[in-house]
Length: 217
Image (tube, rainbow, N blue to C red; front, side, top):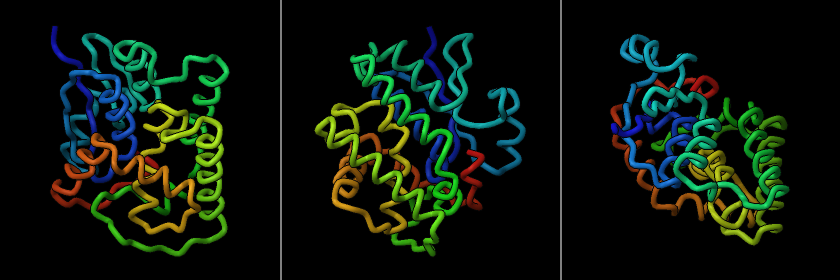
């Protein structure tokens, strides 16, 4: 049987691709990557046959196509991860999914104003009230989870919630966001994870392109 294939965009820019990719890695999946450079004629031509939404990431497992980062994570957890990427307890699992969904559907200012860029170290931008509100909510959410579950990850052990927030930790680091202590500690946990390190190193080595619209990828 052939390996599953995860179609991703540029590792330097595509936070949604990182979320799906990290879920597969933590689920122990042996998979292939198909890399499409964002905002290029090649992407526009090839993505039509690979993703029903025209976006990345998208997972192909035999005849099955799974699009959307969170759906890919849930599928990987059930198909290969033995359920270990979400808390075993029903109520904690619900909280983890709520935490994931908040990232999936919200934080528009953060995503728009601080697009992911693994090469953008020591970048600074003006922080207005709307952006600060997103930053504050992320920090509050992280602090609450860490206090309740003891760390080092949001729900104790690594979970799909951490896959959803890993790109935010990269943003906070690269844009030099001032953070309270719990958020700084959690950011350090994420950025020292071997899989995150590998992704960022690969992203820094990619050819330069015009920065993609984070809201769309």
